[in-house]
Length: 412
Image (cartoon, rainbow, N blue to C red; front, top):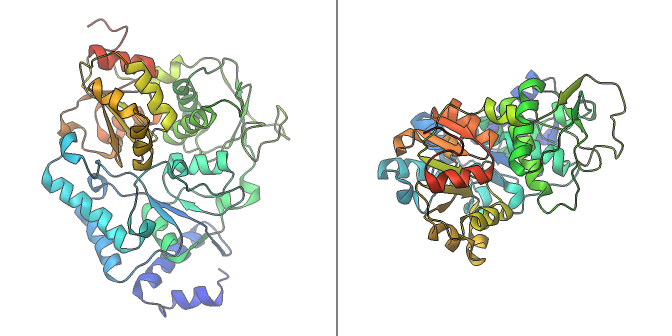
């Protein structure tokens, strides 16, 4: 690999053991994937922040790196934690778990993440971190990667946890994969015959495509989506998140909408074709056979202000039979509070939590064995990571379930 003089010096340990170890990781990953050089990155997004996921071994790893003087060189954000860092007790976490989760975040603070005041979120683009078209970045969380590549036009592979930290410390990543033009071309034509109407429908569409596309680069034909739609980005967010969860899609094209897709209705070359006629199969594929539920969870990926407003409008005048939790970035929560949306949700008996993600939380230990969600990604990880039953349904049905305690249409 062709390294600059500065990069060679870092790799040799001339700037200390922490930077040397980070360079070793970056170079090793680049070598594995055939990179001929490293590329500077403008920002980094780190996964592996939940104590429930990384445990004591991961915490020790972070402590050791922070203790060696590791410091980030580029703007860096954190993925969600397992809990709301301020209101964890309201969620039911015990003090021991909360202390461990705080120690994880504290280690990143010592490394200088977000100037020592991180806002953990899987949607950094909703709180100001929006790299422009062509910008090289090193992001780790799957839905954030897909959004950055497809909606913002930035360039990132799906980094692993240690790899993302290493990129934050060096400001570098390997020039391979989606950093290169030749890997950003469409490889699959997806013909959508029915029109997704809601954000949840886009999520169901993404689930179906991801299950069959694997790591392809889909080119969507037939999507009636306008850039002037006030929730256009929310629909694209849901679409990409689902494809990244059920498959490994990190980039997709929507003609006239996403930066690298031409305005025409067809890709420039003939491609294999995947046809999607309806979305009910997408909902069913990620739903267990459950009637009564313990929790409704909205906000995977983290909810935008528009999504919180939608929940609030549906809850006006209602009283919940079971908990309904919305998860979002803390700055988004603060904005929702200023607009009175939190008062509406909490008045109905719901909660809006910042920082947290239920997919990477000890959901069962919190007392929830069955969860309804309007997110395909949320349902996928609830079932496969949190190991609880899930029902994936449109938002209106999820809100109704929170009011009644029973999924609409069930026989119970």
